[in-house]
Amino acid sequence: MPTRFLPYAKVLVHLLCLVPLFVLLQRYRSGALALDADPVSTITHFTGNWALWLLLVSLAVTPLRRVSPQLSNLIRFRRMLGLYAFLYATLHLATYVFLFSGYDVQAAMDGLRAGHPGVVWENFKLIWPTMLGDVQKRPFIQVGLFSWVILLLLALTSPTFVLRAMGGKNWQRLHYWVYAAAVAACVHFWWLVKAGVRTPWKDTAVLAVLLGARVAWKALDNRRKAGLVASRAA
Amino acid sequence: GEKLNSVASKYTVSDTQTTFQKATNWNNFYEFGTDKTDPAHNAHTLHTRPWTVELSGLVKKKQTVGVDDLLKYRPIESRVYRHRCVEAWSMVIPWDGYSLSELINFAEPLPSAKYVQFISKVDRSQMPELPSGYDWPYSEGLRMDEAMNPLTLLTFGCYGEVLPNQNGAPVRVVIPWKYGFKSAKSIVKIVFTDKQPKTLWNEINSSEYGFYSNVNPQVDHPRWSQGHERRIDTGFLPRTIPTQMFNGYADQVASMYTGMDLKKNY
Image 1 (cartoon, each protein chain N blue to C red):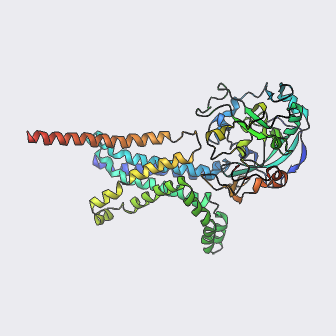
Image 2 (image 1 turned 30 degrees about the vertical axis):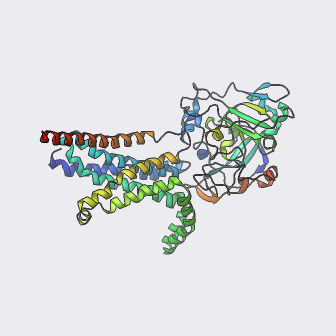
Image 3 (image 1 turned 135 degrees about the vertical axis):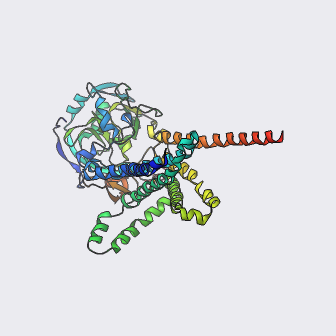
């Protein structure tokens, strides 16, 4: 892609990444979401799915770049994609905290309107024990939270000045954890569906291909290097 | 749907009723797809007539009865029950039917019959979304005294109408003190046995789905707490409320389990 198109392409990718959020808000405003028996469940799955999908898209950047030198510009979109994955993962977590766990959103809103912001915290304290219990006892929540914490660390260290401050090596070492985050996200998905449900297989297959491509590349690269060494020795 | 003539019943809770819209668009009926919105989209392919129910196993005489005869057999009562899913959401639904005990008495089980098994319809041609990996047909079961308890409802309708297909048409059972999956839908066969029958979810994962599966806030599901439930009724968001022992029906059912360790027999 010619460099002069990059700014436009970036705007386009921003907009594309925001489309799901816009669709969700539109479904809320039109009343379509209210027709769902359990809108919380819909929002949870929606935000969780998009977090995972964007994470997979961001992991596709490196293998795609290797396909053709003309795709090398894609690296300019990787941080953005990762940050949007983090945005949806955070919305997913917020859905759990504020909508799923029994948080009294209405009371908190009323409190805020009446000028008592303390109500927000008071209500949070009420659900805290339930959430703590969930984190202690439920492996699918642990593994999901693990994935989110990694994404948080990657998001916090994503600005260029942080990269410089950390040094390239350290930064790279930390950002390899994105693989753990993606694997954990898939495991989270498998562990939450009921026995016999195989919905997560597509996401898992895509992740396997993306990770497999890296392994294959690495193997080829090693052979090429070994070949070079051998020819030099000869 | 078609209206049913029913009379009000004393078995009616005063909780706010779930809207018809929500109760008929949020179903676990895996034969029509594993998403909770699938059955409402897919179940229209089920033919509910002609429909017969076979009464077999340890009975005086094996017989097959038509669902229209069953409908006329006893007066239809409208009962408002709490419905608690093992996934920790709940609804309040007006069901139409009569006590299963009426049909059991009609079936004349032998004294050796200790359990009742319900077999649901399975027909790939009418269930194109039938997922693989499950031991179809759907099967559920109760101990005889549970099946005879007046609360156990042989159900033909809800909200005063014949059951929508996604809710288990044309005939199902509703057992309000047990998790929802115990209440088998679209029943074609009732078998009386002397041994605890195999039940589908219990066979798949017995640690998550016990044979008894009485609603019990003290026994957690391995993946979530059962202490609370998310009540789906009329609001935009479900309300989180505490779950009651036996789903609030302890008065009528607790005596059947005296002396049993309900943590072991979950």
